Length: 337
Image (cartoon, helix red, strand yellow):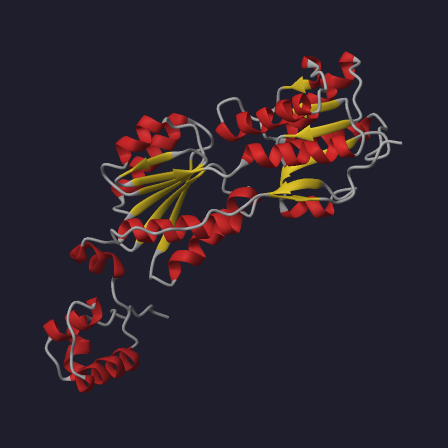
């Protein structure tokens, strides 16, 4: 059987069916001019009857807008980034915007290349979800397209970058461990090139100092925000013979790896060692035992980003309150007797 190509309905066909000029139909669809109620009804009926689908790309190029927002994430499979992207999408879709998503994989050069690709596709703005590009690079890109960046502090005419209170939340997590009687607390660091990793480490150290607990450098071990890094960090602690009753991991993924390392040595959580994470990923409530952690409301973060971006595209200032971090107490921490 021979395939039959059905040509798409054109704007001229819609105009003819509605009894108006193509120019009138075009102005109505672009929203660039008002038409009478009678003509509006005629055009809407013709669109529905003919099942007209406008060419949004061509339409956007004529108007100087593609109604798309580029998002540079670091991983397309991470629940951390996915929650934020859903928040962004929900915030902008009502305004007729769609997302074009690319991953930089934590490589500064690749991140810059992806932003160049997004700008080349004429996106109306770019969202950067953390990453390793320099502030200078991002400021340079903002001369070409509005940018909202999460995970760094930036401010300019066409750029806004913000962070949450990682330091305060880390202090709160440490306060819980100390209240439960823990003094020998290990800390699994995050990536050294990330601002939030430094803030969480500072919260760990300052809370120990506040309670006059002498920090042990041997209890601070390198990590990389990945499960494998947490696994390796705890293996290093156990091999060194370090004594500790609790672990504060710089994020939930590191805590998952730490939990596995303890399990393989028959060390129970929380009976032998307590663990606290950071992020509150969906899976953290289903670990064994459920993980005590700091909740980052990433969907709300994405919603804030989307709202900020719409304001920048529309050239008007938007005041958006930043979400707060909060401690979620589950079953991975116990009181020392």
